[in-house]
Length: 496
Image (cartoon, rainbow, N blue to C red):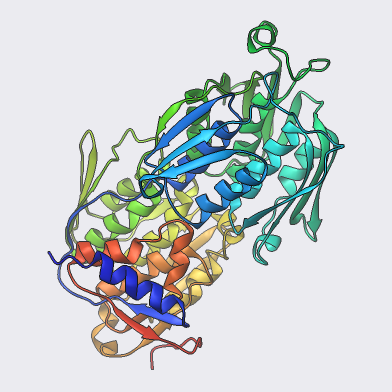
């Protein structure tokens, strides 16, 4: 197989200086083995726990991307020292300590610090909660799209427990977020779960940082643990993406936190209760799994082309719920083999499915492209919250798929995708430019259509840097042929 990683990376960097597009070249079945970079979700959760631990932590297998850099830079601006080595895969984090063991605990009288969160949902949500529990004055600001993404449910929940104030400045409860407080004074929190599970995850990771009333910052961990305070978080209504909540709990326990999740015996209207003990975090050596959401693109490549792709570093027992994407591919007709340290997808003739993807909503765009090549329609349900991601991942996705001559029906909670296989020959040798809306998952998933359809060009491929800077390089490697890079004027084109 040709060594084209460096060439692809150079082309991507050069194209990023222009308004650029990438065209994936169709070919035969995709076959190979790959290990995606570390999980963004795990990296940013581990960074929060390590940053507020009392001591030095080592994170290995970390993801180096825009989202993780935003988190690292934001933590650095509040005094957390993070040494980066091994191409960004190893992070040594000198935690500042928050809770009874806090060093130089900030308070409402400190000077306001502005933290830049770009368009990183995990960064703004996790830090808004953690910094409100730690106390101090902070302003979290991002790009224009971030200031359109809702955070109201989280802010509303925090307003009832902070000793001070927290406010979402933009209309409709969106960032920037301003925090002026001494920490939390309440022990019980209620938060809605229908928009994003990251609200709950943020509250969970913040709860160990709470200092009991009357305690001083120089009280030792032993005395604090003798009478630990417990914070109860109740989730009202539907809880989306539940596997991410379990992931958060597992990461927290790896850094010494004590918490309990309860699904049963709750009052009517509540989906989950989480009890979290105070006491801060302990430093840890933590290994991060490869990103299961990123892996979905390579499993999908096997499904779309009738190939065979093995992803290393993940198993059925992986912490990330997105490995469940393989179960959907299996229902569509693929063969899936689970080993202790790998998952292999063998493509077979595809059939449409009716599937609730609430728990694996980050793979909806990937499945939608696979569905184009099935023998019957695919109905995706349970993902109404996808409209509030980096872009509207229902409406915008449907719009771009229709440019491929697909019939797509939008629903309140998802969409129905009709196959286009019978139409391909009539549309051969045409060009279509697909917009990505600066959404990394739109770029990566839509590019897979080019494995079967000639002339598909993906705008702004550099946006994959948010979570997977080397995606197009890795895709070239596993398909064994180079992409075609072209300059564009920025306009979108349909099949003509």
